[in-house]
Length: 194
Image 1 (cartoon, helix red, strand yellow):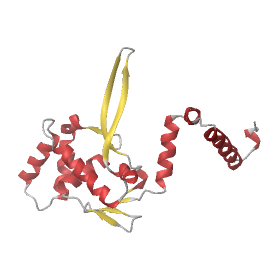
Image 2 (cartoon, rainbow, N blue to C red):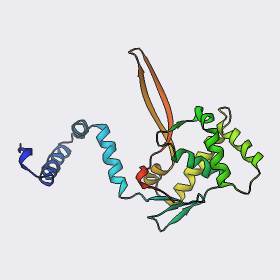
Image 3 (cartoon, one colour):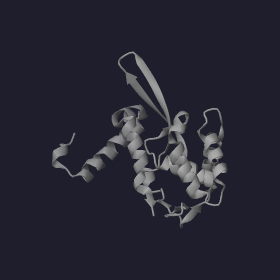
Image 4 (cartoon, helix red, strand yellow):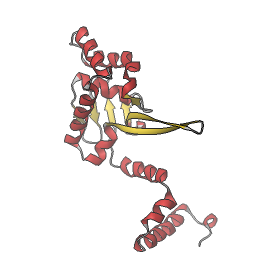
């Protein structure tokens, strides 16, 4: 084993590469995963994807462009843009069942993206979106997903769409509860607000 304190990061990486190949050849990917941990694997996945992901530009009039894909515009209806902008503004995620807590912000985005639309129609649309008894929010998220899948592969699209993320919480030692958040996984340093 080499003394890691006397080597450059590049030399250490070269040694790691050889060790990884030895484990792969031995058919022990389980040990590889155990050695790097699932959380580090996720960090590495994000880092690998970062080179393939485009910056997302949101203009002052709320148009969406993929800057590194020849400024391709993401064309969404105002209601879909409003939903997308809401989730983009909350990288911590939002539970669908708590959408009514974001009614005012969602209304703001909808009114900003649908300037020519009647205010009563906008308020009615927001009421459907935040209602836990209505499927409108799922329909809007599906449409957003479909739009991104039309212009990029599924791997990259997963960073731009609104998707599920479950957080496990412990309260004391006996109670476990789950927060079923919906998030946009795109690293926020790739989001450019005009």
